Length: 152
Image 1 (tube, rainbow, N blue to C red):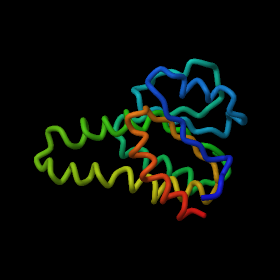
Image 2: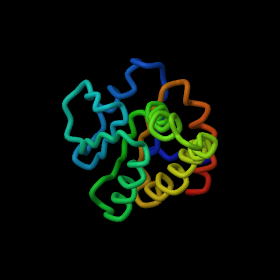
Image 3: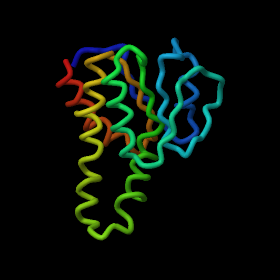
Image 4: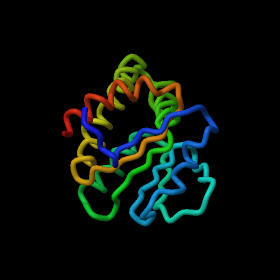
């Protein structure tokens, strides 16, 4: 797989500084920062457009808005994937009348995000940041590798 210097995955233990490393990201006005951790603030001043989501499915609408309106954002940061997936379980699986169906939806959620939304954003801008805890690294790697291959 060829390198794309504008695409990056940041993974590490909780508190390791994944979000802090965004401090040096240039062009802050063109960064959409999607906070999946209940509005947890970044540890530095920035000019990012910040959006907090509570229901993980909201991320599809955000990506679609960016895809439909090219030029405003050159970078999307999702902080963090693992928390977003935990929220999916809490919001859509637990307490569902059909938990088996919702676990199936859970299994498809990340694939849909990567193939239908992130890949289209890559095609339009070739720039994306994803932060994740180490526990999600294998899951992310399994889905990002084929996704990036298809984009090229």
